[in-house]
Length: 94
Image (cartoon, rainbow, N blue to C red; front, side, top):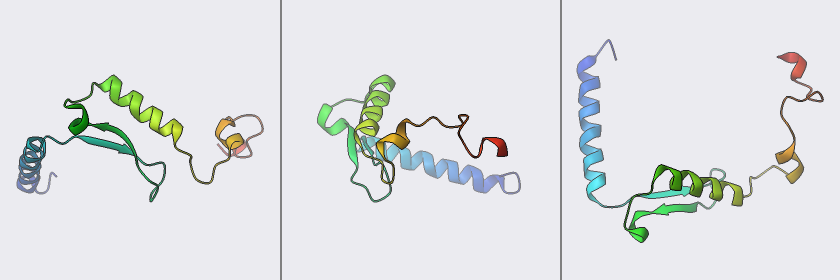
């Protein structure tokens, strides 16, 4: 950035134009996928609701989708296991 400020300003200007064009489409879709390649869970659709979500609504919907999505490679016991407890083999390494 400091070595080429004109490139930085040009990039920011271009991103601002692109963001303006995307907002004009009226679409605001948020999905959650537990892992790459997993089927995404819809969290919010402005096209369906007709409005933008509040931050609290968006956080709640993403948290709900994350809780409902199974995480590949983890069993139920591993999800509930505390990290960094007395029985953690890496505890002494830190």
